[in-house]
Image (cartoon, rainbow, N blue to C red; front, side, top):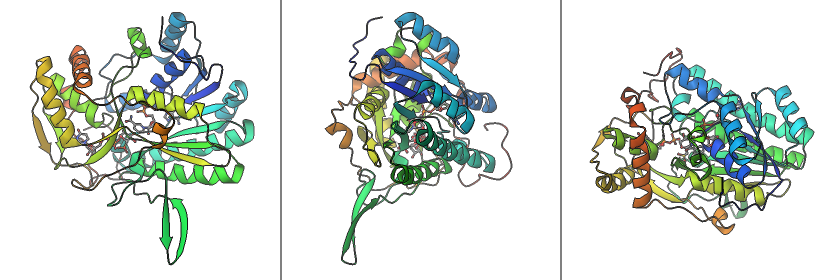
Length: 404
Ligand code: NAD
Ligand code: USQ
């Protein structure tokens, strides 16, 4: 297949932890198409969460072995596959010794806020999986690949919604006549978001203690389905979550509009977040890898392109939908989360733009394309999975054995 690929980093050895997931699969193909030597490390737990809770991807995804084989057959680019868990240090160490990564992109965490609030055992799993996995990556770099650049996915949600502007990772504070630049205050809104806060602190410390090069990418909510590479063949299709546990705001609204379900605005809908197209996720990852952090530094980028409130997202879709023959409704459902529904929000995102990121903005064309795509797979949607099923207030210590 012919791809409009640039290949500045041709030959660079990049390990992608979580490469079977939504962001990780798209990034693996993007880099592989551009001549990077890619190894995917994934324990496939995301697929088992679907099995546990009875969820599914709107798009029909094939198994990881078939995905990787298909990619190799169609493009001649081989991706190495190592199935295992990064909380297992012996496995991770062996992966480092055999692949010898020059950069490691760490997507491999439990990334759903509602999943982390299901019950005590999921809260503990989320923090153990995420925090220990990241500590293991730091030790593996120290022990086996001291020059390897860690590119770690954090989240904009680490900052919460403070009543002042959000900076990129650090803020200069004047206090009692003295000044210092310090980590920006963190206020995660779920045990998941807090796992990322803990990761950031651990990375910041290890970067200094062991002279490791680290980039913490505080990514906003990702939307979109296709990248150039995932569209070559249906066996390369990316996953697309629409259920109330793993589905995220804009993707959920698009799918809801496509299947004739009202768009579920939680509470007043003034909740504002940073968003980006999945084509910008893969672009930003390449930029971060091509321009490594300095050793001993934890560099922080806020990785989003535009800010919207959930009400604004619903309005944008309502406006674009008639062009594809749809007329979605909006419902305000009681907010299952503990969060501000009306608040100030102004986050900086200049570092990636300064390095050349060219954003894909959320215009009508994109919404139309997303809606058409969702309509194509609408029969795979189980509408009973759409309404919120996890309450922050009711999270208890009893194990919830099914999603609702
Ligand atoms: P995803 O769940 O689709 O993918 C994560 C992948 O990591 C899965 O394939 C899973 O099996 C794997 N994984 C999890 N724990 C692992 C472990 N211990 N060992 C090995 N593999 C493991 O998630 P995603 O949406 O692709 O998100 C990727 C990363 O980006 C996450 O860290 C997430 O927090 C972050 N992020 C995502 C979004 C978003 O909107 N999707 C936004 C901001 C940040
Ligand atoms: N929301 C609705 N209706 C819905 C779904 C969500 O109003 O049907 C609201 C939520 O209440 C929240 C906002 O939309 O205020 C965002 O929720 P979300 O589920 O889209 O995103 P979130 O839980 O924050 O998590 C997602 C990813 C996570 C990532 C994060 C980026 O799952 O991995 O870290 O987005 S950020 O939001 O910037 O922290």
